[in-house]
Each structure stands twice: as structure tokens, then as C-alpha cells.
Image (cartoon, rainbow, N blue to C red):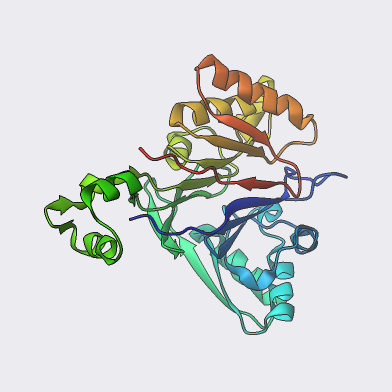
Length: 311
């Protein structure tokens, strides 16, 4: 059945591509999910961005890195030091592709922080692999196509159901009998399915540096909130492919075809106005008649995970 859910939102800490700009920090994205906090791809300067965003470092349980390029992980030492200052002895797990495991361990050593760090290598295979349980939702990953081994992440809540107050009243089920029906599945000839409606689980997806490939669509399939890099405009498609990145058009088309509800665009090359990339993605979605909404991310944005309507 449906249980009370806490805050589910994405805090954008940085949105620049390889090089930061005057208005865009290196990468960094914090997902708040029912009391759990997961930090994705913390680039340089993220410790300071966390202060601007009012993020409490002791709440971070795990750090998920997509690949070993430094603009996606050089902020790890600073975050660990901040955690050591705020909550000495606090444990944190670093997830990343197996190729990046040594690099992540070295970053933890450089930090010299009094934090219990576990590095958990993620296999880079063309299938979903389990990573962790996050507040009852399954965090998984699968390989992408970049210049070095890279993975994308998907967090999926189990499907559930919610009681219909009207159906309960019509069936004469009230008080303690509601809980009994939930536990037993049937009560006085009334089945659980007779007085409840399905509720699809919410899905969050996170895809950074990658060429366009089938794994991107699999990661963001039916996601309520999907973060996709769009380093280049489509007029620079060849450059995007050569450097292992998506264009804004590719991001928009993939999101529309995959049924993404809200697409967060980020990881912008400084050669573009990000608004242009947003319009390119929206135009691609419109071509397909898609309903995906597009959020062009700026540093310190807070983007809620849209609520799921009952099926």
C-alpha cells in the first residue's frame, strides 16, 4: 500500500561542462529522497555550493560518480572533509564504475578525513546491476558510452497502491479493519484490490557524459525526473560524438520517446547560451508530440520530483 513519503527533490549544485564559468560551477547534484540524501558527480567547488544551498553534509549517505573524469569527482575530498568537520566518524559509501575505483580511493586518501569511507565498484555492463537500497527504493546502474568507462544511475520506487476512501466507506471497512485488510488482503469478502487503486512507483534517472546509445533510453524509461547532459547543440553533432557527449536534440528526443515527465538539462559547454540548448530539446520533443517538460538547470535550482497520478 501507499506509505507516507518525505521530500523528493533535486538540488542542482553545479551545471558547467568541463570548465566552470562565472555563473556555473562544476557538476554536482544532490537528490533528497524520503530522508535519504545521495550526492551525484561532485566536481570541484561543491563543498562551497553546498553551503550556498543550505545542504547538511552529515545527511549524505552515499556519493555516486558516473566516471573518473575530474569535473565529476574532484569535489569528493572537500565533501569528505566537510563531513568530518560536521559529523566525525560518519560513514559514507562512494559508488562508481570499477574503472574509477582506484581514483575514488585516492581522492578519499587525499582528503585525510575522519570519515568511514567505503568504495563500492559498479560493474560496467550492458544490463542493470544493483547498487544500493535508498529509503526502500532500488538504485541500479548500467554502462554508458563515453571515452572512459561510465555508468548512469536509476532509482526506482516499488509500485504500490492507495486506499480509496469512498470504496472503503461503501464496503463498510473502517478503523482497525483497514489495517487488517491491508495485512490479510481480504476481509469479510472484500478484497484489497476492491478498495484500492494502483500507484506506480516514482523513478529518478541520472545520465552524464555519454554518446547517444540504447542504454540512455533504458535508464530514463518512464522516469518522473531525469537528469541528462546536453553538452553540445546538434549543429556540433560530430564534435559531440567524438568527445563522447549528447546534444540537446538527442536528449530531447530520447526523453520524449522514453516517456520522461520532467527532463533536467545540464552539463553545458560554455560555447552556448543554455537557453538555446533548452529550446533545441523542446523543439525535438514537440516534433514527436511528446509531453516531456524541460527544465534548463541553473546552479542552486531546486527541482521537485513530480508526483505520480494514480493509474
